[in-house]
Length: 247
Image (tube, rainbow, N blue to C red; front, side):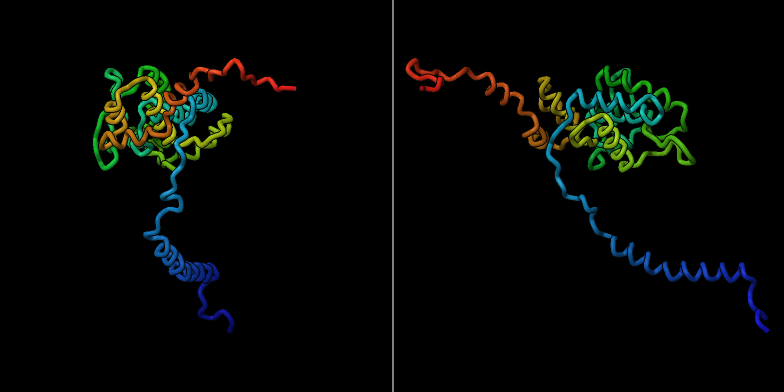
């Protein structure tokens, strides 16, 4: 008789689903094995040093808005720009790493695992204050954290931050690459133009030696060269010569 000793219909469906998963498992495992050890597609790519201007950074901060997402983004921009942190350093910060009374930020996880303390100007602390006030209403955790859901309070992912920066810059009409490291470049360039000694810039950025800082700034801070050449006097044209066309 048809159906004798056969499992119920629901059980048959479950059995088929398990079989499909078992068939798919080797494929997924093969895919993971294929990608394991392979570098990201953008690894090794170098983008030209093209730091945004003050006007462009302020435009992005303004359009970010005053909601929770906007306050977090504005706070992150401030730390990247006014303290010159790497994105990994900024996203690893804890609330307790900030010392506004001294104007200091403790970087626990710098490049190569090195620990250092950096400074941030008073204007930067003022702009960070609205995010700090909102951050106090969230679970204890990293300074720039996830805002919603069961993982609120936990660290943000760098990829999500980069995407938010990019889309916000587009909305602000910034027609150049707007990435976290560009803000770090802007910090270095501005301090160089302000006459800050190179050794202080080196320690602020967390570079291993002065040569790295010098190379870092080379090609992106041509202000002195351009200004010197631009202010050259006009050529001495002999009285017998003239730019007026002769008829």
